Image 1 (cartoon, helix red, strand yellow):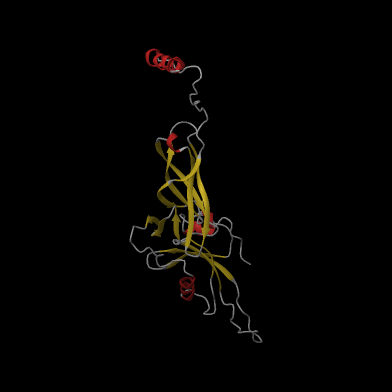
Image 2: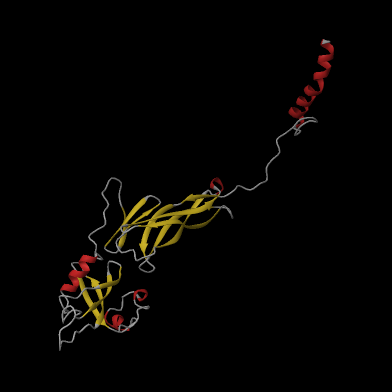
Length: 254
């Protein structure tokens, strides 16, 4: 019986010896694991945000990121994935599709984040980093520092304070059409209630409405143009740097 067992083990002993001496891949009856030729499956992952700059337009910012890169097909489509807005904060996530280990290097990329309404001085929470706009530029809120919206140049109460110093009736109220912290556009009636509620016999109310273009100049808003016309012509004559995107669609006032 012992001799039979020794003979029965002989093929496996010879196979092991052949592999060791000749470097053969295997022997009959062995079951090597098959090699997989399937490419890695991309996954969606956040990218590193390096900076934020205003524009294009009052509703948008350009987000500079560091995206993974490498062999062709290892990464693609850096983009905004999800956005939520409140009156003070815009939340967003920037992601890309990547195969991870197949992307050994990094490259800069830019992604535009567009909100539903003008951003003004709202905070931006992008990939759980908070950015705040001060003096027209976005800076990252440092760890441990209290990050609050700076005194709002676009605050509705401030806009009405501006109207109070205009050459209009004390009854007039301004309607802000757009504001980005540097430029403001609003319509203001000359005197909507000159004749009182219901009017008075022989009294004619001057309810003409004009559009005011204002620029924030460090300590307050200053009027640069006033018109009832639509479009950009009047404001660009007075302030050539006024953003065309904020005036091109303005209709004439009745």
